[in-house]
Amino acid sequence: MKALALLLAVLACAPADAKCLLASQKPMTEAQLFFGRDIPGGGAVSDDDWSKFVSDVVAVEFPGGFTVTDGDGAWRDAKTGAAVHEKSKIVLVDGRATPDFAKKLRHVAETYRTRFRQDSVGVVTRPVCAAF
Image (cartoon, rainbow, N blue to C red; front, side, top):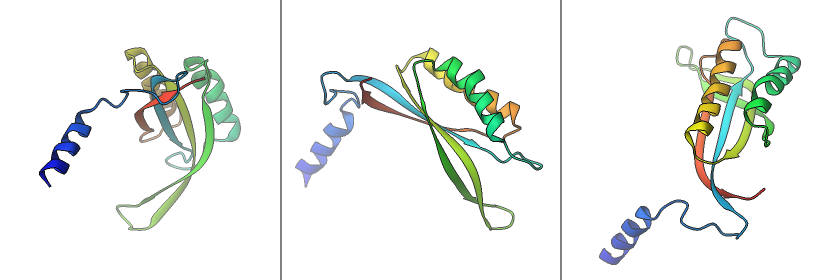
């Protein structure tokens, strides 16, 4: 049992980007951004509004590429207890874990939040190995 605990402790201390599986891969950060399309107070971000946002903001910040998928966000309303569903967009982008990459992620999220009066934009990051 002590050997298992020691092994788990050693593995927990191993760096996440210790070695990439393929020689062509490099350690990077993968970011997923979650954009709700309902506008508080009524209405929704239209397909045209979304396309303009992607063209004017996302593509400018990440000219090397990104992926956009449709999503269906859901959560429980704290006041009513009802399940709430909202159409959403998910942007996936990889980059070097630098202050500049973080700044770009913050800019994209903040611009959307402000432009479409959103309470928040979800941002998830994780270390990965990638090759393009």
